[in-house]
Amino acid sequence: MRIILLLLISAFSFSAFAVPTLEEEVQALKNTPRDYFDTGAICEEVARLEFEQEFQVPQYKVLTGIAYDNGDGTAGELDVIVFDNNTNKVIKIGEVKCWNDLKGALLKARKQKARFFGNRDNAKNMSFKMTHGTETFTRDQFAYVNEFITIGPQGSKSAGFDYELAYSLRDLMNLREMMLKCQHDKKCASLR
Image (cartoon, rainbow, N blue to C red):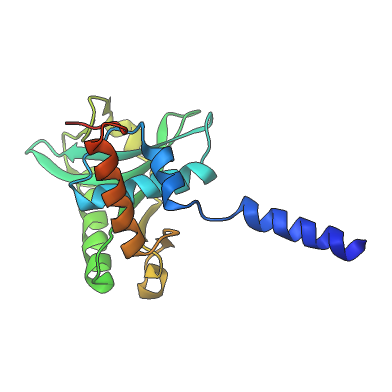
């Protein structure tokens, strides 16, 4: 009896943390309007879904795609942004790279991180705006964020990334194709 109970608990624990199927991810993303012709968009949205498991509502809000302007025009874009709703401040930023060349991707992500902190700390005028929406944010909301991580596809931690998604690059590109088809068939939200 004890062995059966342990097996049931193990089976339940495994299924509770199982990676969703690509079809389940389509269902989770179907109401999120996004342009998936941009190949990085699918990785950003999957990262958002994964982070929403850790940073849950109502305390947190996880967004994707916030561009920042340093007064001279757009200086960069932040991929995954975690807000603490209690303080209305950003607590974590993630730079997502889904490239075949993981070393090159990591180098690029680190440069983008340095550019953000350089602009945040030195630019006189800074503004923030959603890249696929109209919402804006203040410099003060980003003033104290220090956690800026790199995010890549499955296997990217071995190349030095801080966090890896549950899917391989191939799976993510298959999911992208599924989302494009879903949008084409008008079953998923689209920006077009």
